Length: 317
Image (cartoon, rainbow, N blue to C red; front, side):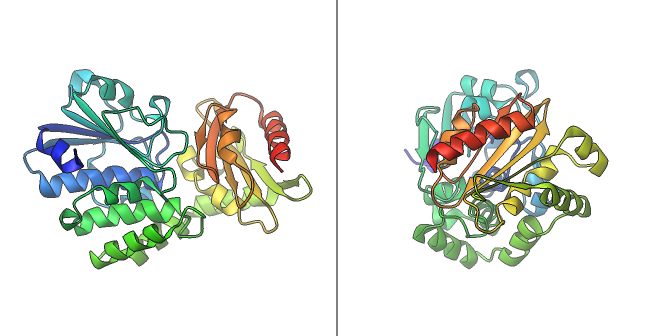
């Protein structure tokens, strides 16, 4: 069955992404939301997303997002989409309960750690640049509106690092070409959501870079920030999600590592360039992701966690 055929049988639809939504999560979830709004007016659709960067509100659909699902208020749905998420443990907005109770479910993802059996239909391509790319390839192209295209472009831009990461392929650029033909606001989206930071984000990113260190003979650049630092700069975990992309810009390094506090633990963000499989390292901390971009969580002190991670990187190098 196609996505349109699933939608043709549904009267109620819910859409979920992962915890701490990034650009691909927000892009793919709002793309599904907009696609349904534009083409299936008889469907009652709800979008559930945890807190995300304010700049992502540039795409339509974000204004409708609810922060959490409750069975008592929202009920049971005919169809639930799980976007950009490889496990029930990573589902955001309290969505795991909703997914398990739904009549039918669809998982659209590109994480190599995805078991391929989470939902009724699993559209998972680990070689794809983003969940948005996978989604576009499974939609009726003629029904993709300007607003849906904007959302898809947001996700592709962020999960390719503005087309710098190795996940960018020929098909990725062909999809982007199709989206440009839909009249997307590509310059505004990439500038305001990827390259632009708030003043607070600029200050805290500068602080992190000033205090980052090199390890393993300069092959690893790493840094962490404490709850006290976050309080001093007045930033939330959401505002720190893109710091890793600046850390990884240090020349001559293979791996970038950044830790920051989230809900009493430390979030681990890992990026690599050519050699190290950071997904394998993230799995050691209950996480996962992609070969060149992954994350996890730890209850260890950041210095202890960094020491463990450096040893794992050293084994691969």
